[in-house]
Image (cartoon, rainbow, N blue to C red; front, side, top):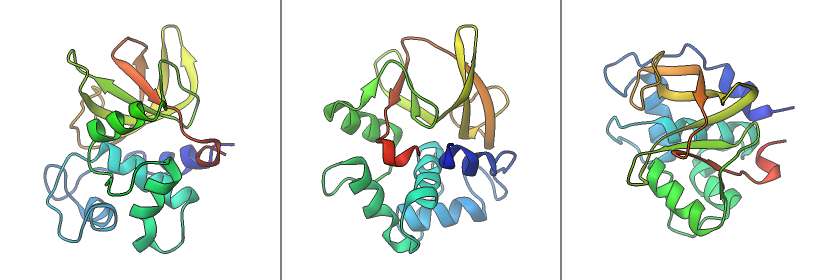
Length: 170
């Protein structure tokens, strides 16, 4: 039973509609998780936080930003703005692993260890890889795509997982 994965899958096929990294749904996500009037930006990690907040968080969207920080055990002042910032905070808290469970968040790292894309690990595997649901991707697996896609990713040293607390996976 993966409440967050079920919700994320409802967004499959949703695409940017107002240009690169923009559209009504993305504007709502930015306004709730970042700040009102935030400019279009890469949104893969924001999609993950949006899903977790909607699946497990408070009913009042104004409380989402603080709730996700507290639910993850991140320090006061942290904002859910970027993949890399999230990865660094989770790494410092011992929450990063080489393997993930369905519902955990995966990060793609570049050769310098900079996290540049994130999404959910889905249920199911294939020889040498795992299935995903990810925002701001495309059919080719871009880290700055145009919508929400179900993908298959090969396991590699450049993929790490944020092992979410059980309360964010049930």
